[in-house]
Amino acid sequence: MNQEIKGRGAQINTDNPFAKLQSATHLDMVFSPPEQEIRTEYLETHPKTILNKVESRDIGLEYSMNPYQGCEHGCVYCYARNTHPYWGYSAGIDFESKILVKRDAPKLLAKKLASSKWVATPIMLSGNTDCYQPIEAKLEVTRQILDVLERYHHPVGIITKSALILRDKDILSRMAKKNLASVAISINTLDESLRRHLEPRTATIQKRLQVIRELSDAGIHVTAMLAPIIPGLNDHEIMNLMEAVANAGAKHAGYITVRLNGDVGPIFIDWLQKKYKDRSDKILNRIMDTHGGQLNDSRVGVRMKGEGKYAEMIAAQFQLARKRHLPEAKSFTYDLTQFEKARKPQTSLFDMIKL
Image 1 (tube, rainbow, N blue to C red):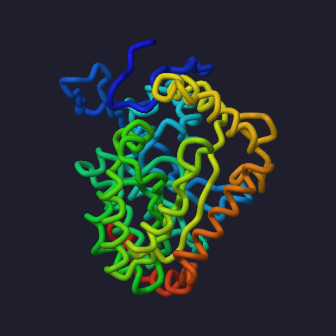
Image 2: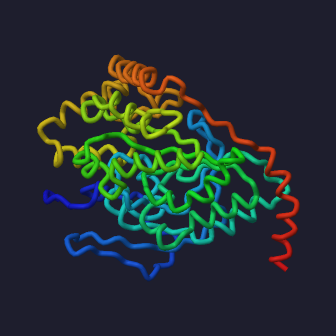
């Protein structure tokens, strides 16, 4: 496909090796802007469990929770694209136009937290796909999840690119006062033109800085994730990005170097050659330089930052930027003790409702 698809990150659908679709019910919600040929469809799924055990040692969390599979934000570099083929769809355009909805997520979570076997540990919302993508404004699945977590005094972390999180500032601020909630805002450029190409349906850069400011003012610990850093495309912005997020009130910052795993590789290459053809070879060569000559390195402990001279340069720039603009960066510690105190009466309430 040579013609550019506006409003989408991926410009192609990669092959799907899984022939059989999993069961899903089509929701009566289909949006097709007049200027777009690719419409967004929403399909309801009914999983038996909602929490995902995270086995990777370099992720820094034990459980993640994703009320949506696929993501309309359309970030072209997104590693989560590789999960969509398991549902019978492509990691390309399908990933951002066929969104699977888990409406039962709040009930499944309440049941899990009520179990006597559950031990409190921070749960990450959006460990795979954004829990505040556009359809959340209508369905409010994420808000219902937060209601459950607040009721049980259970710790939660959220990472998002969406300004919709401000809708839930009331719940998050109450939980933050008890050291039960923290938020990470992903922002990787100050160039709005690049943002539109790279992450076509996400909040604008100014909106994201506003989100950092408003959440911070509400007493919520905010980490700015400068991610991904893409060598040759946005790595020169690290210093200015750090200054912007620090001025907005971020308490901490981190970064990840891009890696083009699985189907993300051909999707990104196709996108790059259509959007930035004049420097596509330079960008790809620099990405490969950080991953031992490959587009991806899956080794735990290495994959997030890369290695080699260029990766070392990125790390040095980040450390200098944080030292200059965020010298007193503060990490966040969750209070896990409140959950046990809250669970007993909540378990009784849960049983009464079930009866």
